[in-house]
Image (cartoon, rainbow, N blue to C red; front, side):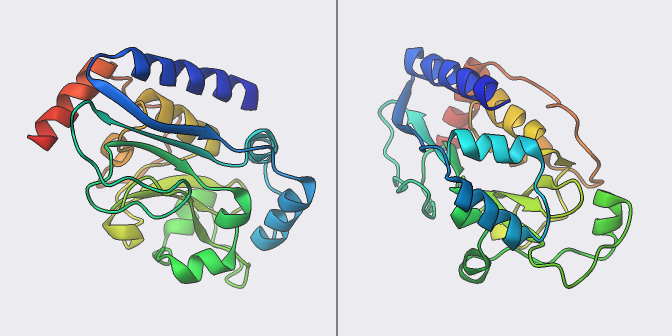
Amino acid sequence: MAASFRERLEAMVEALRAHPDVEVLDFRLGSPAAGAALSRAERAAGMKLPDSILEFYAAHDGVFLEWGLRGSTYTRTDPYDFPDYGAPPGCINLLPIAVAFSPDWQMKFHVNELMSGQEELFFGRELDPERPLKAITIDNFSKYNHADMIIGPDPVVLVSTDHGADLDSSDFMSFETYLDLTLAVFGSNRFYAVRTDEPARLVSPRERPTLDAIVAYVREEEA
């Protein structure tokens, strides 16, 4: 999975660079995470993490990409930091595993508590309320929306809104599906692709828009 993601990510970045209306502002892949960092993340989660998650971070401990429309001015983001208002419309900010799986991160950055019934929806049952981590931010791609992983027997990812206060307006999915979704929309705002009034498991992206379509939408939003 990790090799496939890297190849697809690099192909996506090349497509962005080749588009006449797009400027890639920053792109970097983190070095592989050390085994000790992976072990600490599992201790913080209170469970054995799925192989797909461990393989991802063992291949690249963090991914950062920002792109915008050529000629536009944006508030740039430091890699793995907090985006501000006015940030570029295209952003992947997959945090290093030590940052994402950290109680410190939860204290510093707001991710809301799960609502009644959400655990049963995600995992088929309510889980031990004393488990170490519940919801953590893994992809801090905008000021108002970010991707959050809900820790459980088979962790799921959703896209929160209202700065992480609303965890109930997005479909939920596996980590692998979230990565697929991110590439499918060229790193543009994932919330637009998953928002719903009736959350359900998403097994693949609903749509795979063309880059031209995404650029046209961004241009309209910035007008």
